Length: 207
Image (cartoon, rainbow, N blue to C red; front, side, top):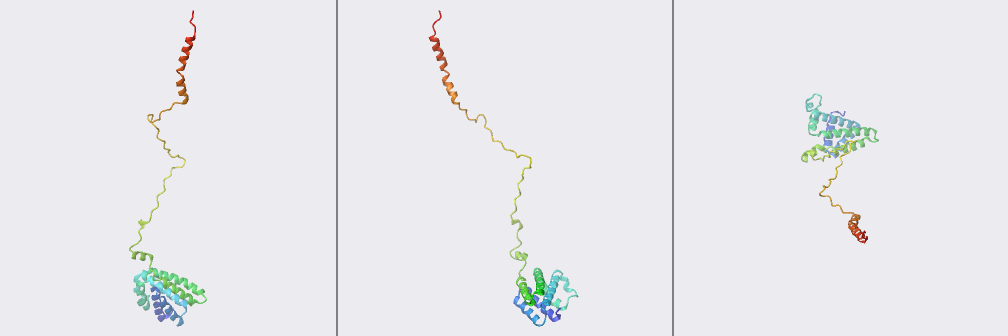
């Protein structure tokens, strides 16, 4: 804890951080650092106040609770009312990661400054749902192409029915052409009686 004066400075820093004012955030951070405050402790206080703002956002009646200090009631409650919930969550997660990095960094102040810059850059970005509402509503789910249902397959072990080709009726059948030898037999058939007649004429008359 940084005391009453430090609490006011933390809320001022936090307000600029959530508004996306990177330059103002770094200025307040430098002032706290030059006044002898450890950057890790500064970040811990910022995280604590981010948690408080999130609780005030979820439970509005908490603003009437006696557990709040005067600074939290006068500065924290108005800030919680205008801060987006998704922005509070992103800032908390990013600074929580930065706190662990600062503890292992050779220069903790530099690590905290870089984290504050990242948070101030993404904090004003609204959530996807808010952007879609600003464009005219949520996306139409019915517009998503539906996948075609798979075709039913024949059960295994049963042969699929085979369609038979239509048969021609007797009337439609083409006339049968005679074979070549049939024509020869027809042409040679009348010659037999003529030969028999010649034999009868050549035979001598019986006595």
